[in-house]
Length: 238
Length: 238
DNA sequence: TAAAGTAAAAATTTATAAATTTTACGAATT
DNA sequence: AATTCGTAAAATTTATAAATTTTTACTTTA
Image (cartoon, rainbow over all chains, first blue to last red; front, side, top):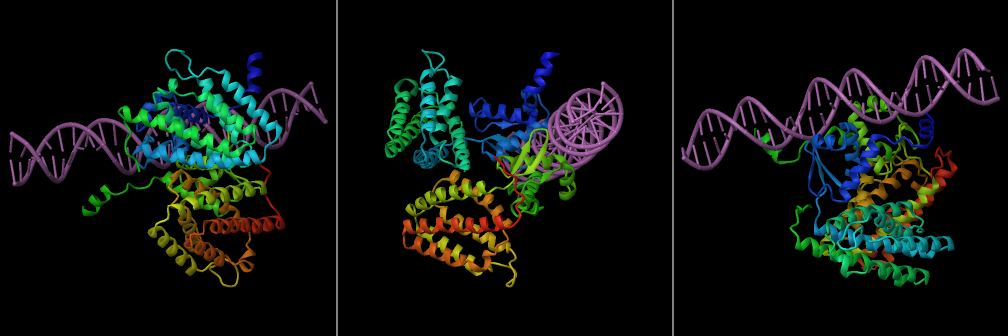
């Protein structure tokens, strides 16, 4: 009874629709639900143990985010991938995050710099892969990676812009999940992050922006290489 | 039978959820559904003559666009307005559309320039107000105004960025609808558009960007003046 | 015999109606 | 005055029905 009472006050009463939205999104971003796949209500109801309505609501939200495509009267599909989209997303991310980073730097405060330092420290400590031999995605590292990049632009002073950057990060994450990451060995991502941090702490915005863009473009290059070597299921969407 | 055959190949009929989504969005952007208002299913079902499911789906889409706020277990509300949001939206629009306009100009082709010229021509011809005495919003002018601004950034080569700009335009449109537009008389918007067009055709990107930003900031200033003079219902959102 | 076209059936998506759960509000009691 | 209890309203979810699309099978024709 005590446990119940405690829980009642503590837990936030998220609706089923919201929790399914989050699970579906996670499964799409991790590519467990592969690009182009048809999302049949029957299948989803079984998989997520839920009714049609909450599923439908979740799918409608994801449609607006362009992670799911809804064809009228014809159901829902995981958004297909394409090299074209990868290029546009990467280019756009470089543009807007450069903008946001410059603003963040212009508004720079000790608190912001310190938070960035901490975010980097945490990222540095987390292992990139759960398995030291073979690459195995570490959710904690992914989370901290996102947090570091979010902190970089977090001081720009525009919530709409931050939201847009998050959306771009989401949509690009899917491509990273798809790539089998031979990059794991050959690329020293940790050093790239350290270099960006240094440039920021030096207040060298031109250098910071240059490094950030290079960071994103290199990632895209590795993904492109992976995607072209493997058989890509991707349909050529508009 | 011919008609059927033609239809089959063409688009499938829009779903109720989509048509309600569009109507709801239009009503929110035109402020017929005022900021902060509670959107009760009962009321909406009556108003839009529809069932719960399509309404719920429409509301969920609008939630992702930040035009509707969904409080868990507590229903939906039209997103409140605030001077803070107005400022952030305007600032952000200046930033990203400047970016997009520069790219458009860098990719400039005769076809693009000509399309812009035509868009401007059409805008110039449409009357700003349906009533020459008192201001009365002309939907056709609004449409052409949007088209002109869309054309400006349309050549930037990034669909995600264009989509983001459209969203910003939507969210700002609501503020314009709210403002009672005494600006109608004192401001010569047509001249501002003409100046922007001229700068673009002259390939003077610095000037074009300067004028575009000024255009948006002036609009925001007029809205601010209106909003501060009138009793603002706006709740102070986060 | 094969191909094409049509019609019926099956599957799936969309919409409505009913049921359940949760929250808000007010009266009664301590 | 504060708290608890109960009732009413509202939101969420499940279940059912209607409409649409896709598949399958069959007939007709070349």
